[in-house]
Image 1 (cartoon, rainbow over the protein chains, first blue to last red):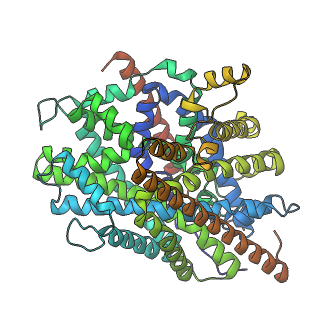
Image 2: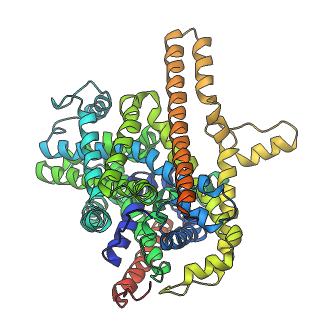
Image 3: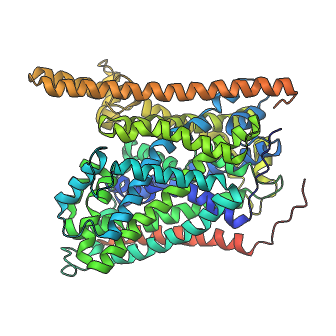
Length: 561
Length: 38
């Protein structure tokens, strides 16, 4: 057995750490944009249905299986899931997803986290003062170029990235109760405080005051205006299900890792609900009241739609808000900038810390590594894997990590773990595990939801992203299939992405137009994208190798799952 | 802001806030867990 004797210091610390794991940048930047693009207020209907039928069951599955694994000394998914079906030895390799996803996501997520830190710094020193919107946009573009500097700090984006990574590594090296829990207890209340301050500012924006063109309520009205006809579009349901994944951090292996440090009869049912709903509060109540109301207040609905379609929530936040905050005066503008990007930083760091724990738990359990070494090794791996996203951001490396690790892996692992829980381990055993020590009565209907609905929904999400038709037009695609005209994959579908459809079309178009320079650039981009995929594959296979070595070590030591 | 937007927003915000507060209060008032299991 390793030297892993970590434990949570308090129940509230665990809940805040779990909520912090779930609350991320997506709560403030992704959710409002998804709502605007997928039916406005009507989006909340599939969103909440997916939360009830997929999000909560997955939370319960992950909390229960994590606590189950922890009783046997397993604190990462390879041997947690293996322990649920000891006869079939392949499960531990499926569990590799629960380490791989965290490492790969942390690699690029820490980069975004470092932007927030940099933007806090620039808000404080007044870098954005006097800049118009184009200049703020240009500042963002310049920041992404490694050898450019916006403040005289050489390699500024690398500098902030390393600071961010070092901070994560240091907190992780202090352990669960001494590091992660303390960080969550500081960051979460501050995040909610900053969120409330900004939401009040956003909603109370008045046309004609502080340079605003419209009231903040215009933006709220725009975001919440229900377009009920969107509910018949499967793409809207897929977007809602996808948002639930991102926001709850399910399918990553972090929840199992955190829960594995719980004692056998400690509650998981009520804790999971509390952490899950806390995340929903931050996302639906605070997340919807900041970005869109402020941006609509200054730009109007049409311009915001244009900005959202071109740069998404991240574009709005990093390229527009610093300009808008200037209208609030020197002090309030600076406070708003520090609050907003500070809020994003706290949301980011509580998530990235969680991403470090599965790797650390694995190395401590299987190879007896000290916590400090495990944390340092995590920091080094993230540095090596993350620097390509910093250096080659403009070549699509960042997006590739996000797609494969932050999107596909989550769905695949969540789908498999829900089937493992309900059908392989057995729903009766799973139900008993969930209810042991429960401080709330779990509605009986959830036994059936866990067994039938959740796996079916996850299968729907997976197949939906695999075979997504062109333009997300499912009805047209089915008609075309039935009439013998085949199925045209969307360029953004899983299959379309694997085959680089969009890039190939752009290259062909550039060749057709005789624009060889663009064609060459796109070809280079494709090489970087394929390189990023290879790097991710090597990472995954390396973890598979480590799991195999750990398994052989367990055999030699007479330890079996 | 239209009535439909207002209804949609208030219903959602109130529901989410109340449910979150309910679970949080349950945790806060729960008796302190003891380490009697092993």
